Length: 232
Ligand code: ATP
Image (tube, rainbow, N blue to C red):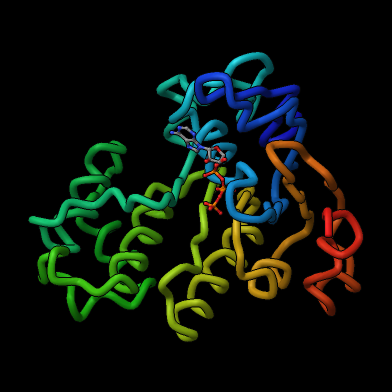
């Protein structure tokens, strides 16, 4: 059983097909880099896989079950564009709150651990509304990892991070993969993603134009997939 299986999925906004017959799989411990130009459908696909967005025809399975089931949701970690943390709470309060919602045994301990792992322990009591974009993104990373999900769905996770924070996130993702987590991430930062990816999928206008293993050639020349399978 694949950790993530997308079979023949269509998604319409009105009569515009944002996803057209998408088929993708990610096995346990795999890291799939989802690439494609602006508007190709990456965000739509990740939100659909995460169960936030309803789709038309087709089927999505996470660990064999629908992502819309409550039990499945506990196994998913998500980073999206609108970072879902509360502005009026501190970093520590945010993570403790989410740890409680996930039913973790020791919410404060988990929150403190992830503040440390994302380099936010110094500002743990600061209100999120005063955070820079980079700090918010670190907090979003901490939130996504907090409940140790089996599947991480990450939309542009490197956005707004400086080089040090990118290296920290790459380290966390590497550790996660070594522990058998499955990662699907969308990105414009090809180099950072391909260094981690075991597989690559290229979306063009809502369709999968390429899906296959990430080769050393692709890592050496991140533009290769576009050059070979893209439109121009
Ligand atoms: P980006 O890299 O810019 O985030 P993307 O690959 O993530 O792009 P999506 O945001 O998934 O692409 O958008 C795919 C297509 O669906 C685009 O043509 C977009 O205009 C359209 N679209 C996305 N969200 C909506 C919406 N809520 N209503 C109508 N059309 C939408």
